[in-house]
Image 1 (cartoon, rainbow, N blue to C red):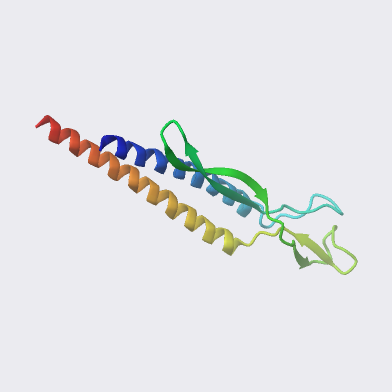
Image 2 (image 1 turned 90 degrees about the vertical axis):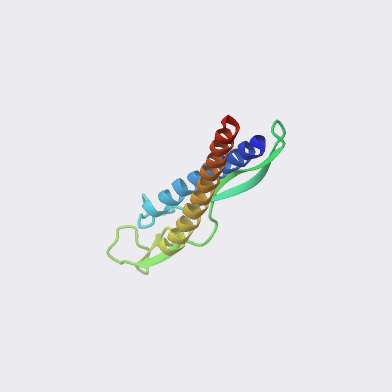
Length: 138
């Protein structure tokens, strides 16, 4: 039983690490949501996406989650009308990042809830281990 609880904590820890990285990437996306290109003809910040994968830990014979890679979102950049901007095209538009604050906020809430769920598994497993040790001492 103790080994099963330790396994649950190991799996949850891998989930917390993956969601922690996802939260950092989302923070970077939000921080750059209103940025513009650094020069004429250059692209603005491109949104990043975290890709997960199921990973078999052969030593423990457990399936864990990990981040396979962080990729750029290939979607179109937004355009904003600002004819006074120095990098505006002949029609007065500038390219803006393909970051939507609403989508990033929703992704952040999902990652946060997943992180918290994994934390609850660890806390519950620790509590069960502690109770089991207390029972064995009695």
